[in-house]
Length: 88
Length: 136
Image (cartoon, rainbow over all chains, first blue to last red; front, side, top):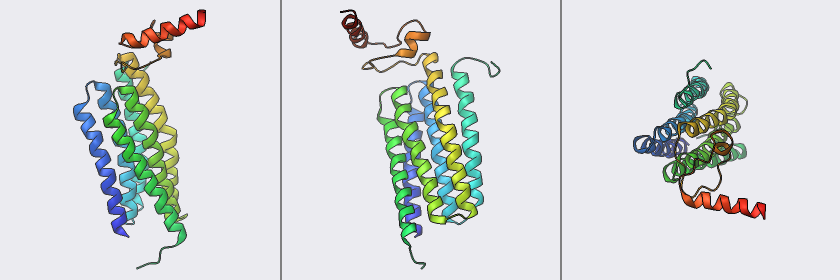
């Protein structure tokens, strides 16, 4: 059954590579930020699938932390894009 | 070789649907013409796809610690991903990212920034035509 999980990981890796293409190519800085946000969410899925592939439940803990860190990071990037400081 | 039950097959189908949603969202991130279309495509489908992966893991493993953690991760994802996408789109509008020239309406720019941020004349012409229709 591990062939199924590895093929799912390959498909998710292709999706992350497409986000990387957008990060390199994006015309404005907003496009690059969108790419970083989407790639963070894709890495959450990759981490959880890896956890179930090797039967390691702590990798899903890492996925939870990755969701929250990606949320805070994207909010900080959006504030920076809006040219405001972090405390108003 | 362990035997595959019906519940396992349902879980695999849910995970596969989630992965397909992820891939289509990433393709939309590459193919669409401007920032707002890319956010529209990528955020919604990638959020639902990753939530599908988490629900599939819960179905496959049952109510073990791994499955409960996957469910919690999916709930956090549903709570946080739309908020960050909304902040990103608002920030990019105030940053001044240009809209695609086929864009029809820009309500936020008209309310807050004193005029639509659409670059082309086609969209403005269509909007003024709508205004004339309303007057008539």
